[in-house]
Structures are given as C-alpha cells and as structure tokens.
Length: 135
View (cartoon, rainbow, N blue to C red):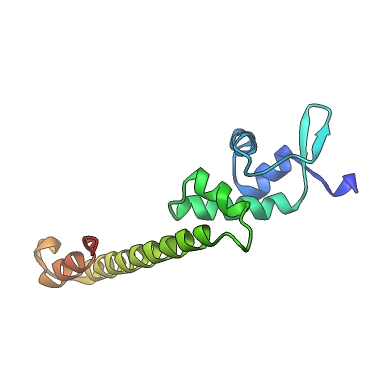
C-alpha cells in the first residue's frame, strides 16, 4: 500500500503548491502526512483533493481557521452550518459584483467612446457592481 503514497514533491506538483506551503498546511492541521520515506514526507493520494478544496476555499476568501473548521465539521454542527450559509450568501454577492465588473470590461473592450471611461454604459455597469451596505 505504501507504493500508492505520494512524496511531498509529487503532491506539490499535482496540487500546484510549493512544498513549503504543504508543510505550512500540515502545521496548521489542514493536511497530514501518512509517514516518511527517509526525510521526505509521504501523503495519501486523497491529499491532493483535500488541497484542491483548501485552495478553492482560500480563493473564495476563507481563512485558514474557517477551512480547518470545515474540514473537521460534523453533521450535528448547526452553528457551523449557519456560518457556511452566511459565507455562501457572501459569495453570491461577490459573484454578482464580479459578473457586473466582467460585463463592464467586456463592454469597454468594444465601446467606441473616447475615452472609454466617458461611456455611460460602462459607468452603469461599474455603479451596479458597487458593494451594497449591509441591511
């Protein structure tokens, strides 16, 4: 079974993360080595999927503490479920803002106004993309 294990260099290559990031994530409890082969850490291949989740969550704005909590979540953790729902709502708002910004940039790429920033349609998109104050 040890032949299925990946060393730290293989996990780094497959995940796109530096070995130092893997050691840092291990120190934070987000991943764990299954053992060592000499001085090199060895990981279960599922670690690559776990790192994809960590990377995705980081890109979505999760803190390392939030990721650690998510990775250790149990079905009965209703407080965590509420926080995850709130995080999902925040992401929905960010997605909407990013979509509007994307639309403004796409419009600017074909707009004939000179200069581009004088275009009222461009500003309509930009104004729509502003974050809304909390209710």
